[in-house]
Length: 114
Length: 113
Image (cartoon, rainbow over all chains, first blue to last red; front, side):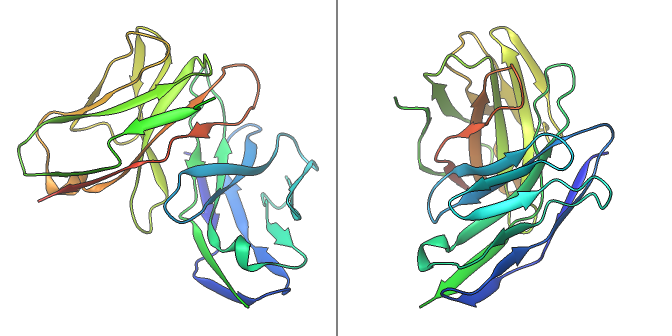
């Protein structure tokens, strides 16, 4: 079945550091790929998405490129801020006959220190 | 626009008790779903619905019931709570067209003692 493997955390970085959170996936067909972010005490919010190979999703300085050849969707940001501290989830959706199920990775907790 | 709302935010149950977690959305979305979030396991799909009167099981449906009598509401029922159901529960909704965003509620933290 479908699965998502993402970088184990927790990850701690200094403000203005470069961030990479690795994500690889296994799926049949051509899934859509997502990064969701969960701030403390809140639900999940969509951070960015890509729906086909070589698409780049971007939002709030974060970027991820859909790489079909390596089945990857790594999250990057050039200069992190304290406000980026959150849990980040990589997910895929292989929408099938109306089941819009999201398959999630285990999440990566990111802490940014000033 | 309220988006997806869930009640209650917190709940403590004793083993064997029953309760209903409420979920409502005001975006006229056809698709609604329930996930549970457990440490080290990400989110796992419990049940989902593609419209009023239509529900189906996700990957961890045992111990939970759902119904969808209106487009707006999708309650999750625990018939006889067990400690293994201690978790954070999220409801989500989405329009059926395209690879659009799923909108998540703020969650219900449930503890079963």
